[in-house]
Each structure stands twice: as C-alpha cells, then as structure tokens.
Image 1 (cartoon, helix red, strand yellow):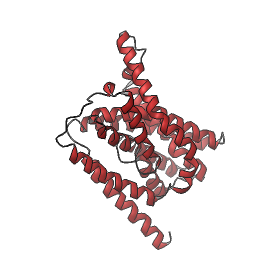
Image 2 (cartoon, rainbow, N blue to C red; image 1 turned 30 degrees about the horizontal axis):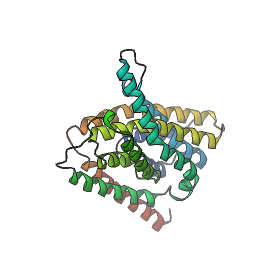
Image 3 (tube, helix red, strand yellow; image 1 turned 60 degrees about the horizontal axis):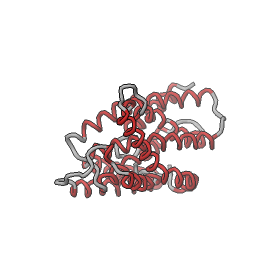
Image 4 (cartoon, helix red, strand yellow; image 1 turned 45 degrees about the vertical axis):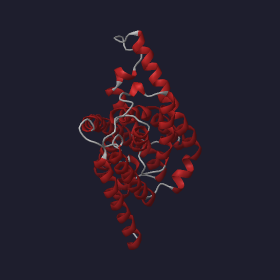
Length: 278
C-alpha cells in the first residue's frame, strides 16, 4: 500500500467533506482534484469511489441532526413525533424526481457530462445566479423561516430544483438552496432542508454505484473507501456547523464569487491541458 496514495485519499476525503454541504459543487471539486492528483486506481473504481465516499458526509448530517430527524426520540411528545414524520414525508416527496430521473440518466451523464468544461460552465452560471438572487433578497422577508414550515407543494418544487444538480458542477446543495430561497424559504431553512434531502439521495446514489461496480473490491480499495468516508465524515461535521453559523450573519454572495473564480480556474486548467496535449 503506497503512502502517497493514502495521502491522495485523505485529500479527496477532505475536499468531499468541505464541499458537499457548501453550495460550491463537491462533484466539480472532486473531478478537478482527482484530475490533478489522480489516485492510481481503475476508472470504474474511481467513478464509484467519488460517489460512495459521500456516505461519510451523509453520516455527519445524521449525527448532527439525529434528534431532529428521529421521530422515536424518547423526549419527544406525540405532536413532535408527528411533526418529524411529516418532515420525513416531505423529504421523501422532494427526493422522488431526482431519484427517478437520476436512475434513468446516470450512465448518460457519466459518459457525456463528467468533464471539466461542463463543470466550469455550471460553476460560473450558478455563481452568477447566487449573486443575482441574493441581490434580490437583500431586503426580503422570507415567508418560511423554519424547515418544519415548508409545505408539501414547496417541498416538491425544491425536489424539482434538485434535478439541476444531476449536471456536474451545479451542486446539489446549491441548486436546492437557490430553489428554496426563490420559493420563499429563509437561508437557514433552505440549508437545513438541503442537508436532509441529501440523506436518501446520496444513500441511493451510493448503492446504485456499488451495485454497478459489483463486489470486485480488493483489500486496498476497501481501505481507501473506508478511509475516504471517515475523513469526509469528520470534515463534514465542521463544514455543516460552519455554514449554519455563517448564514446567520451573512448571505450566499461569497459562494457566488467563489464559484465564478473557481469556474474560471477550471476552464483555464483544462484549456491549457488541451493546448499542451497533456
């Protein structure tokens, strides 16, 4: 087992943990980082690895919001348990569009859109959208302040916005947060609902990738997967706490500017790579 390869896995886990919950596209970052450091594994394994280590990030949400998401917490009163079950029904409803369409087009997206140019374009486009929408929101009072106040219809519409995240570089959290704010949800409610939507979606996506890859793991690959997930989990805990603290005092404009700059860097990198024939 190569120590340098282990360092690469650590870097990928750190990048996944930080970028999964911030609206800056974890897939875009992972494609770029993998292109630069290039973990020495077959392409089929890497396609699966870059998705499955997201399970570590998902577990961070489960741990941090366990009481809020668990309807069977002993301290909850019947009305609170009912409210939690209602929240879960909204989460499942919102996940249906992406689950169905994602399953149908997964191979197409992987074959034609998993490249630096698509990532660069979506990073820039959605960065601009964040700036435009936040400028509009500057003096806006959001109708929906808490995640439990999101009605079923709004939850479904947020789920439709999540379809946009099927395009690499869009950012699942970015598209759902933007959609939720457009539909009248506060920044905190938008971010939390985005976190919760990630649980079934990423478990499903990871299971799909594992099934497609098959049980062809060797010992080294299993170690890389576990290590990547553990690192992603630890970093995600801090990333989620950071984002929720940040948006109490700020809007999302910083992330819009960051996306535009990163998109330009990605475009430049891949453009130079093509010109130089690397």
